[in-house]
Structure formats: structure tokens, C-alpha cells
Length: 416
Ligand SMILES: [Zn+2]
Image 1 (cartoon, rainbow, N blue to C red):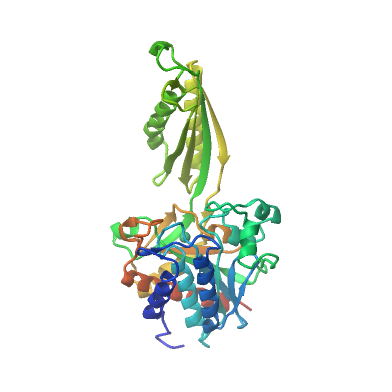
Image 2 (image 1 turned 180 degrees about the vertical axis):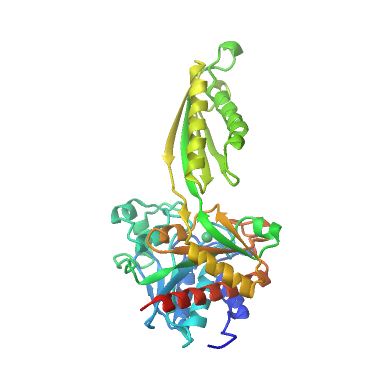
């Protein structure tokens, strides 16, 4: 075995990312909604590159692009997504796809490496039509009925019409052959500022947080805003505002170190300047990687609602409308990333949960999965100014390729 195995080609990685940035450019970022022309061109760009990594390319009936290898030995799956949020950044998604491509180019051609990296671009990770449609299709958890009912959030068209318009209608969807892959590895920009602030180069994701969502309804009494004395009002809107403040005072005493909570939407009924709101509703979300913390906070939420209701003026109902278990990332894969970072990034790595959702949480349902993060400048993402320093992009690529090499080696030596 050579002492200096081939590493990632940093200039090639940057050139690839800039090639993808040149498709659907918006200011310094990109605009590539799912199944837009720019998204389809990006998928075609990847399809044309995959043979360079000795991979056979296919685009399936949900818009996933998959590169498969005929090489003997263990197969590691790697990838991310190529569509973007509207008018957003150039690295969210493409970074992970290009790293996967680079790992495949470096390792698949190397006779010293037993096995191969296979590459995937998952369709619609950004949720223009649904929730992780591409990766869920691949793991066999997407029904035809759900595709039937999915609609474009940006335009008046169904998912079926969109599939038809890009020539994918009727094409078979590919699901993973169980046991084919030793696991899944995805790289992504952090989308937060903790790596930058901590002077770290690589984030090793321990888990992807679960998201719990609640609809909280307040029922009071609608009345005239001019003639109803303050003392006798049953103002549902005011009760809602007080409730938000009470959450912010109560939750810090019971939450975990990284719990976050957000009231994302408030509606008042009827919502007019001269009418005391008789009804009010808030959509409230909590994210954490520990279900026990969520249980505790939900209990508090329900207790606070009961307290308000007991006072007799306003009724408060808490309804849980979404609960998501956190996805734990594989321990041995995390160790491999850490070892690789020690080797090629001076050990500047830190373990951390991901506050954002990623395809890896879907893949984790059926195979060992892991993620690594690179720093986001100023912690900005889902905005066209999103960026990462070139040097950090290159370091991330080197750690990614080295991690893949280690995972294939471990799997290869474990076999037989
Ligand atoms: Zn992303």
C-alpha cells in the first residue's frame, strides 16, 4: 500500500462547484427549484460526469440521479441534492454531490481500493413538492398516492404534471437493493455559525434533530373593539401573545442545551382592526435531538394551556400535528470522519447535532449513515449570499475522500 494514496483534487472540486453555480445563477447564488430548467440541466451535468468515476448513470422516475459501479467489493453510497431553495445559495446540496463525485473519481479508479463509491443526487430535498420525495422513494417509503397528491409550491401544477413536463412520467423509480451498500455518507455546509465561531473545519454530525410541530388554538369571544370594556373582554389574540411570552420564560428552565423553538405563524380570527379576536391560532415548532426533552416541554406546554383555560376566559387547545424522531448517525462512521479529519484537517473537527433536516435522516432508516459539515461564512444559508471559504471547501473534500477510503477499507477487511 502506498504511503500517500491519491487525495481529492481541490481545483477540480472548485471547478465543478462553479460549473453548477453557472447553471441558474442568481446574484452570487442560484435559483433552481425542483424540475426547473436549471435543476434539470444540473442533473444532466452530473449524469455526464459520472462515467469519469467509472459509474453508470441513471435518472429515475422521481428525478433521482444514481451512479452505480460494476467494481467488485463493498459499495459506499454518497450524495446530496442539486435543486435549491428559491433564490438561494450555490453550495447547499451541490457541495455534497460534488464531494461524492470526487470520492468516486479518486477511489473507484484506484486498484488499491477494494470496492467503490456510488453517487446519488436526491430529488426535491428542498421540499418544493413534498418532504424528501427522492430519498424516501429510494428507501421504498414513498407511495404513488403521495406523488398523486403532491403539488408545486411555486406554481399551479401537480407533481405528475411536472414529471410529465421534464420527460420523467411513467419512468420506473429505483429503490435500493437491500444490503448493496455498507452505508451512506453526505457532506453539507453547516448552515449555522458554530464551526466558524469555534475555529473548526469539520463538523461530525451525531444526529439530525427531530421536529415536533403544534397547532395551538385560543378561543375567546368576538366583540366590538370600541364598545367592549377592557375588564370584560375575552381577547383570544392577547391570550396568544401572552402565551408566546410565557413559553419563552418557561422553556429555558426545562430545555436541552440545543433545543430551539419557534412560533412560525399567527392568525387572528377574524383579524380586523375594529374587532376583538374571538379566535387565534399559532403554529409552534420545537427541534431537539432528544425525545425525552421534547416530552418534558410538551408536558409544560399542555400544562400552561390548561392553566389559561382554568382561569375561565379563554380556552386553549394544544394539538400535536407533527412529530419526528431524531435520526442517529452511525458511531463507526463518525469515528471514520474523525480519524480522517485528524489525518488531513489537523484534527480540527467537532461532533455536533444537525438542526436542519437532510436526506441522511431518510437513508439512516435502512443503512448506517453519517454526515460531515464544512463551515458556513457568517452562518448564512437559504440566501444567495451563502458561502464557504475555498480553502474550507478543499479541506472538506479531502476529509470526505479520506473518510470514504477508510470506510471501504474497513468493510473490505471485515468481509470473508
Ligand atoms: Zn441541503
